[in-house]
Length: 336
Image (cartoon, rainbow, N blue to C red; front, side):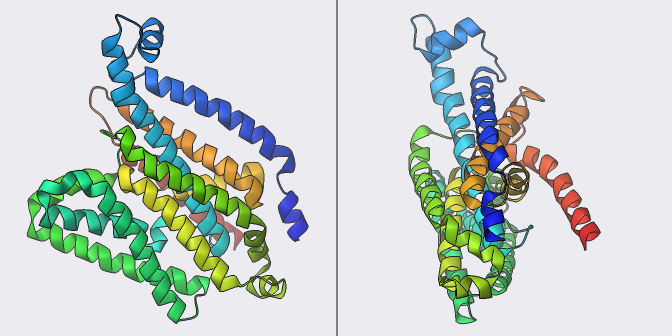
């Protein structure tokens, strides 16, 4: 079974990576060129290469659109990798970054910052990352006290998510101004993203991706069941905790600048698994590219659909992800 798992999608994974890479390049090119004020090809190339007479186009490309598109690529990659890891180590097709407290932890940290230090809103990405990551660490610590099994991690995550969401609601009731400031972050959007905000998340996601690739043979053994994996010499609980920390780092990096962007970590692993099979070594690159393409296109749709009015990418993703989630539930009901 393990050999079949590792060989799944061999014929498709390489072709899928090539197609998705080309699609990503095309979507990035379109997203940089098209917007509420679309650029002609002459203006685009002139602004891109900083030619004389195209200073306005250069500013649009390098100060507004390029950081936003790169942010979409990074966020899509981080959330997708996180979703793949969580679904594989829990054996749960509905697992996503929010089950390990990433969204709730980031949201609570940001709204607390806005309530206590409203003048420090510019450092909300730092608070979002810290809140998301430390919430996951706390969830793992509590789950470890009860055995560290995958069911305990999920149940502990659900409990902490409910508690933190209650805290968010409580603070919102006390201060309506805070709710107004928090609303854009809670929806998920990429407007106003700056290049320097993306350096740390990008580095952390790349390192997490590479570490997951190194651990992929061990993660694949979890598909055989905890007992079989333990018989093969795998410390299942330790491996699962390490993987949850990696998944949290990826997701926390994404939400730190993109806000509470939902559904990416849920739907991308499913689509990618159909293209590349279940082997982590082949699934991860496909999922990373698929997530990047999806968020770039979703953000582009949000920018141009009702231009000049902009729809946050989180709303577009919800419109795509919610029907997919319902289909997934119906499919599981049919299977069982």
